[in-house]
Length: 270
Image (cartoon, rainbow, N blue to C red; front, side, top):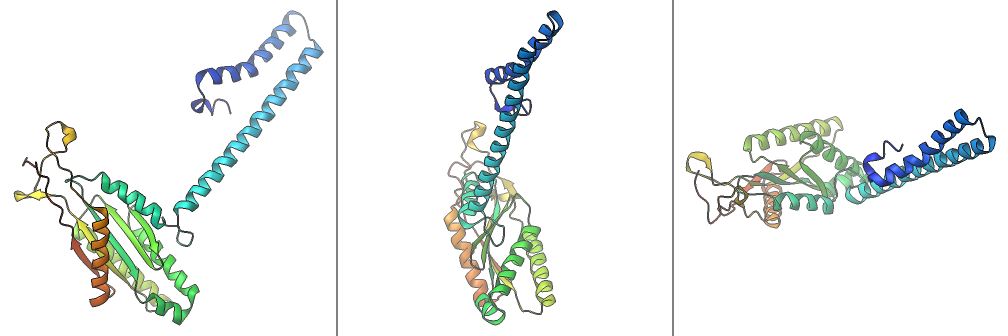
């Protein structure tokens, strides 16, 4: 156990604890070889070693118990109890962190997913069925997108997802097509008409003529600023407006708004 904790202990602490375990044993062996056995000394060494081992085991169990309790509390604080997805607060925190680090080369897709006519589903089939469809939609979103993507339950029957490192329309159409197909298959299997509407805000990398990226980040030392100026709140608002348009005109599909971020003032072609 001491060896397993080696990385968590400083050198002095590790050596002192090891000496308490090793030196009495070495001294006892030396005494037995040089002078013969002393039952009193031998009993003291054995008893102290037993006490040391039992205390170490107890501390080990207590440490892992506290660590498990902490991890459980942190998980419950960050995740939605029904779906297992991140809750809104934790999801927004991670999304904002990603947006804060974006520059003009980075791209992403932010989207709202909403179960259409969810109140009707609850009124017709009951809240238990409504809860089932919330979990089903969450499960399908989790399976379609990568672990690096951020998906959270926004609230009620609504979800928000950040698909990182891509703004490809083909990726968007393919993944949402799979999502709609799986949801249709599941609704037909259960004999219920359940579908979702999606609103998308697409944040593409800033490019110039010839489809070439503009200058590199200021960290490269060339003095050029390529920060993308992406406003997370504005992206959320646009995705929400796109969702509203979908629900108003064509439920069960998706609408895409392209985020129009300004080019950096000192951008230079490469």
